[in-house]
Amino acid sequence: MYAGVVAVVLGLGKYHASTAGDYDFTTSTRFTWAFAYIALLCLAAYGLGLPEVPRTLRSRLPTSLMASFSGAVAMSVVQLFVGDALLPRFVVFGAAALLVPWYYAMSTLAGAGRTSLERRDRVIVVGPPELAAELTAELAGNPEKPASVVAQLCEEDAADTGDDRRPLVVAADAHAATVLVLSGPAQADERIVDQAAVLHETGVRVRTQSLFYEEWLGKIPVADLGRMSLFFDIGEVHRIQFGRAKRIVDVAAGVVGVVVLLVAIPVVAIGNLVANRGPLFYAQERVGRGGAVFRILKFRSMRDDASAPTDWTSEDDPRVTSFGRVLRQSHLDELPQVWNILRGDLSLVGPRPEQPRYVAELVEKLPFYDMRHMVRPGLTGWAQVKYGYAGDERDALEKLQYDFHYLRRQSLGFDLKIVGRTTRSILGIEGRGR
Image (cartoon, rainbow, N blue to C red; front, side, top):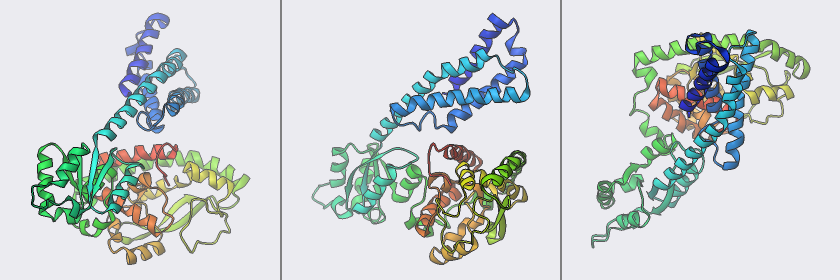
């Protein structure tokens, strides 16, 4: 998809230079600005979920139109701000028009590929019915890899009875299974493991419950959180070079963020005068790396006289003002946290920090919860893009499964993926983003 964007913009630029402009496109400043336009188009397309997010034919066309012309409008705004025609209108709007059918075609191909993957990854679960139901529900949501549960066998039903009956092999053949998921008890039963070995030799992939969760769902299951807490390295703790590189990225992002913050402050101040009277900023204590408490900075979104909550807050909290709701929905209320990033309280990506009273409750109820404080908390995180807002202890436990997955897979590449997913979440394309 992105190769098509490059080809269309550069092709139109070259065509315009040779037919209407009488200049050498590749040696002109327009060649450089063409790549800036390409970047804007690609960012708009990715932010709107192309090519893989739109699931229906009806949603693909408007998404393709919006992505294409959002890039064109963004480039027009840049030109207006600079006060110069950096690229000909023929290139800007011609590319936008040509990319609509291209985006649509790529989105359609991605949808076909997803359907193919769902048909290809046919899962048999060896375990209790509750496990199969849980996996079915998870795969119907927002999995990292599409799959479908086609059968479930209890451990005793799947075991070889010794009379040459191999019920697990028979079930896998009958359902054309490609993936076999084994519960803990199933892994300890040689009668099941022997059959799994036979299926493995025929090309069926065999996974434990924990490995399937990580590979297909992007999290570690609740049952394995305590057991897994010691059995993997954490980038910021065990790899010094990674920690330094991550901090350099944080400082660079913080500097850019502060510039954006300075531009946003007058706009938010005017909005406050109209529909959110009171202080511009709001500071709140949060628990950071090593359990240290720091004050996180936000644009105030609640009434100035709103008392501190005594329970978990909700997304539709009645204390939020009308302009504060705009700040929250656009995520602008989080922007002042770039200052916390520069100070070293926060990282760009990491587990979201919680208030001390919530942490005290959760550490008492979930003994492994405190492990997330081994790294710097983040402005955004894997749990935020995959699950979103935590409204109670059950939500906190669900998010902890994603936090552990992040700790286990921590890398700059994974951080970049999370930043991209956050962009989509802010635009309302996927996830429940906080």
